[in-house]
Image 1 (cartoon, each protein chain N blue to C red):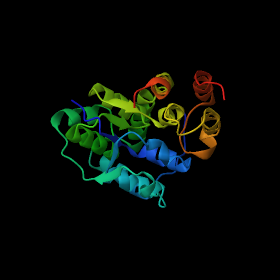
Image 2: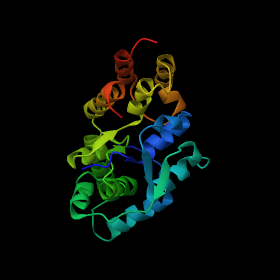
Image 3: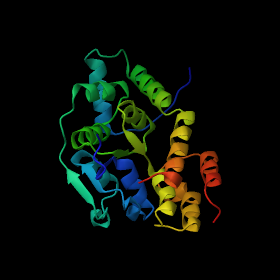
Length: 166
Length: 64
């Protein structure tokens, strides 16, 4: 049974939300666990990353990789951060992985893990009243200009079409 | 076949060369092509689209 009090983040959403000035969008998810390996990756890309902007963030040590996770990580060719995130998630019984890599998402889902990415977190900001609908439209319109998240313009158009009008 | 020129970190180049020198692959080209094939297979645009649209659904109607 997952522990609804925490989620685990891979580097992608942390980096992308920081680029967008939106780390506060992680609010309300419970403790945000960041494996040490992931934190090192975040710091490499965002040296000035202000961890204190995520009130519930905790950097946690790596956990042992069990046989099932080892096999899945090989099958999906996961990197060290993704493996560490999944290992921590399984150990802490966290309820969700935050990740933007499609292969890592597939791997996590094959292990029965719910995964959400940066765009989901941005859209969620409307429901959680962290941003107005207009602000979310603006963020998504400018997503590829303001962040290193790679998304096609066609897909962004589809996403925007699903949102309430600003 | 076509050629593609890429730049990548020296450390990665050393690992690539060692891998080939140790006999784990016949050439650096083979490794790069295989790595590229695997990446493209696991980052297929239709898959990414379905993941993102699932995120949007969660973002709008989820419970967390």
